[in-house]
Amino acid sequence: MQQKSKYEEISFVGGASIEAYLDKWTLTAYADNGWNFMEGEHRGHQAPAWYFTASYRLNDVLTISLYAQHPFCKNPLSNKTEVLSRYIYKEVSQHNRDYGNMLTLNLSWSLSSGRKYRHIQRTMNHKDSDTGILQNK
Image 1 (cartoon, rainbow, N blue to C red):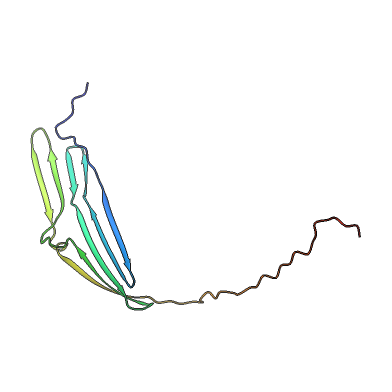
Image 2 (cartoon, rainbow, N blue to C red):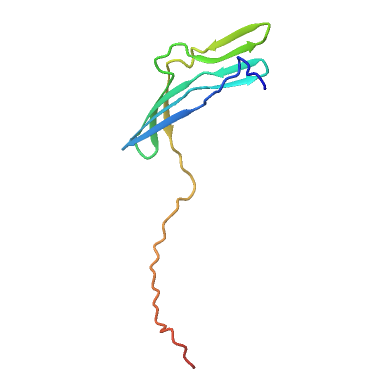
């Protein structure tokens, strides 16, 4: 019977996203719990993430949107690594201020080129005049 190491763990990786279309507005929210991995004596952890986006379509070609990454978090954790050994333990954490409270404003202009598809109007004039009876001619 093999004994379980104290460093073995079960990990659940999951994420959720929701999107709402409200006339010219599009609202999106995304969140995940990060992910873990174990490689030899190294255990890594990618930090959780959460994002929000609000877009407004001004007309057929112009859209403006505001994207918020890690709102209400000044200095979020980006990743963490641990060295797990019988002889040493080391933990390294990285935080990234650029990802905290990050707001991005996008202006999208849709350009079109080439031919546009034109719908062809066709009328159906099929008449069934056959009686279904074989005739000798």
